[in-house]
Image 1 (tube, one colour):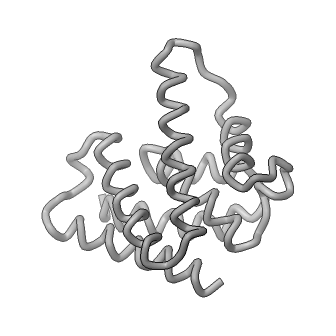
Image 2 (cartoon, one colour; image 1 turned 180 degrees about the vertical axis):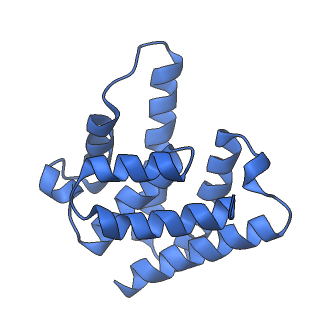
Length: 153
């Protein structure tokens, strides 16, 4: 559990420092904000451990897959169902219980997915709530990361 805290706090610190250095994410596109977030998550993960590197890489691959699907014009699907399926693939266990788990390492996968796949805090928090389970604990850390990236705006 300490590694989870270290990973999330390192990420928040990197995001906060990037916004202090003049790269305010308020002026960035959704894709640019995602790139800033992925860079911070990746750097923090590389310092904390392989399980976090895997979580970030899995989430990035899933976002790329989703974006390609949407760009193909194939339509959209129920986003909550998609979130649950994606996190299930990331965890290697597609059961609803695993996705909604309060286990710290499992929750990191949900947090990383929603922070990367959503454009802003409100969208991420709504998606988190709709996924159910230990959503309050996940919401605290999602808010920390997104606020560190986006600032008080």
